[in-house]
Amino acid sequence: MRIAVPNKGRLHDPTLDLLERAGLPVVDGADRKLYADTVDPDVTLLFARAADIPEYVSDGAADVGITGHDQISEAEPDNVTELLDLGFGQCRLVLAAPEDGDIEAVEDLAGKKVATEFPTITRRYFEDRGVDPEIVEVTGATELTPHVEMADAIVDITSTGTTLKVNRLAIIDEVLDSSVRLFAREDVADDEKVQQIATALESVLAADGKRYLMMNVPEDSLDDVRDVIPGMGGPTVMDIADGDEALVAVHAVVDESDVFETINDVKRAGASDILVTEIERLVE
Ligand SMILES: Nc1ncnc2c1ncn2[C@@H]1O[C@H](COP(=O)(O)OP(=O)(O)OP(=O)(O)O)[C@@H](O)[C@H]1O
Ligand SMILES: O=P(O)(O)OC[C@H]1O[C@H](OP(=O)(O)OP(=O)(O)O)[C@H](O)[C@@H]1O
Ligand SMILES: [Mg+2]
Image (cartoon, rainbow, N blue to C red; front, side, top):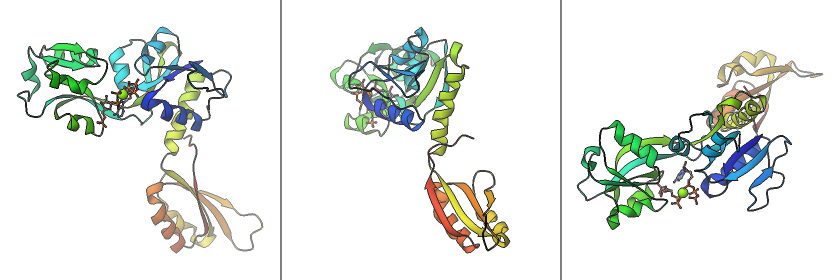
């Protein structure tokens, strides 16, 4: 099975990182290689440009892909399905125009020019609104085009907003929200291997921001301790073998943000020997 992943740029490292944490590290990832084996002999990675990945999957060069939702939406393949939002690469596609110009609304762009690296999404956006500007296709530095008379407005990616600000462009409208997705060709989406990969990645995401708490609790205090532990389901309670006191071990998964308060609460309720550890993966 082949997974197409970004070969460079901002999505490359976080993607390989996530695959590694999910138990699928690359075993022969030399720089500039176009493919790499993973520890799973049935899973190979193909390195491709973020924008080409939807086509790789759609055409069958790969079965599964990891890239931005914006790229999947731009390529419009009709035979792929998104399986999982991987949470990183969050950005927005926005319509923006010079801060001090006279374009202030979508309607102002009738008969004008809009530059973008996303012509399909942009066309669809304007069609939906019944406005028909000329779409100027560029492959980068889109923010420059309104300042050199190539365009009156742009549709481009923003996340922190810095690039728009530096280029004195103001957002007129939101076009699309994006983040990185795991997606598959529909004819293989239900295959066991594809599902295993989705489950492994999901388990890493589920463990993010969670901590594992372990403590000893006198049996008499168990109800009080149970009452102050927030989070997923009930805690796991185990007898401690050969203890001379009537102690039980209590284990629980809690949000990282609740750990400080929970430790104080369980201690007050009678717990001792409290341990907090990170969780690598969590399969629910
Ligand atoms: N500023 C950003 N913040 C968050 N995500 C972004 C940002 N810019 C791009 N992305 C996401 O990363 C994807 C890939 O971006 P892009 O094609 O620009 O690659 P790159 O990482 O810049 O490398 P290159 O442009 O050199 O190929 C985009 O489709 C989008 O999903
Ligand atoms: O809102 P911001 O945080 O400023 O991010 C937005 C910028 O990020 C992306 O460019 P990138 O840095 O990937 O450079 P590129 O044009 O070479 O792809 C995008 O094309 C914008 O220009
Ligand atoms: Mg980029």
